[in-house]
Length: 96
Image 1 (cartoon, one colour):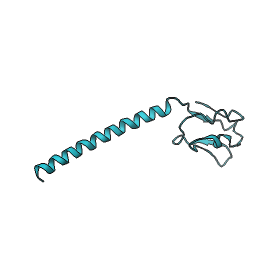
Image 2: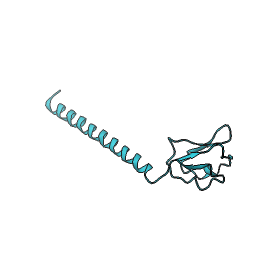
Image 3: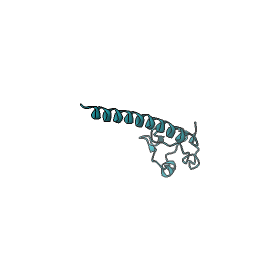
Image 4: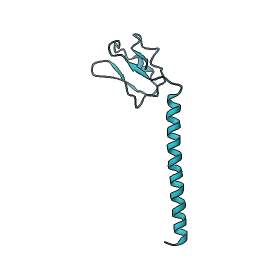
């Protein structure tokens, strides 16, 4: 490979590393921002009556029904917005 080819390869590699670092930094910031104004929630299985009110208001469809007819929250999807808390008639959903 000639000098120009090596130079371009080094520049590409350097830029790729910078982009990877910037992406990790942005991902970290977004994760912090996603959680900052929100509150994590938990579903109390003893109080849940399976009315699905929480499911109907979840903006990202993170709440689902289990086989036992009780709601559960998929934490990897949940954006912790708390929209489900006030709609639960039995107050089965609360802040952690």
